[in-house]
Image (tube, rainbow, N blue to C red; front, side, top):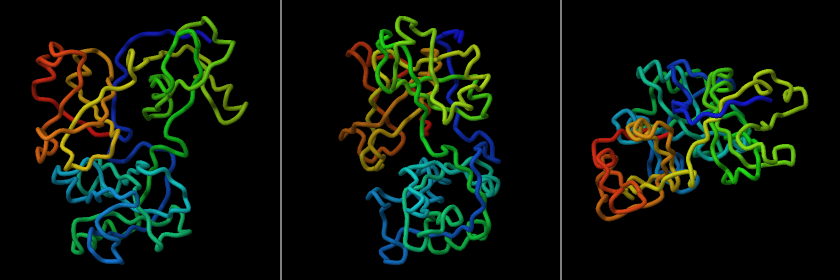
Length: 297
């Protein structure tokens, strides 16, 4: 296959750009609400991995970057799986990122037919929309990224992210590809060849996959950049952050991950971030030290 390689900006957009959601895995469910409380029925203040619950009201007030929801443990959904709910998007006139981070016995063997949405209080949990019939649009199907193979002699880091705009447009979503494989057929082909993993031989014949593609390989010597934030936000280790000002400065999508903290950030919330640079001189960069927008994926 012929591939055009460019170091272009593959624009980082949310997986759900519209209030109606853009995923292809949709289910009809009955919703309920729960709230953080020291109560065996509500389940306490932490999710199933021991992280603080994020309520819908906290998100609406700008105090949380996403909303915790609980579903059937027997679905084996990966922790943090993204869900888009168009009915709630329209109610609040914004795209609300929900994540499956909790469960409970009430959902066992209910499949995709039940969801419990975390709210701030018992009163909020009685919301009519939450407790009605809602649509669950899963933005990540059964896997969170797609395996691809490339030339081993290109010395691409294992797990390197690749953005392919032609496939994003075809499926109307941002698809995360990662270089995790190789093969002799790619030896010394550099960035001119890529093999995309599909479910079957039939799927492998897809015209777009086998046509000219643009590969936007994100990053250089490292696949992401370390940042530090307030530990009292209880942001999960490795949480992705997008900073558009720096993307535009360097004309590429740069993946930042929250992996550090420090006393200078305590109780500063989302208003402070420290970006790791190569030297003291680099740390004085005007863009880094100016007002920044933090977008949590």
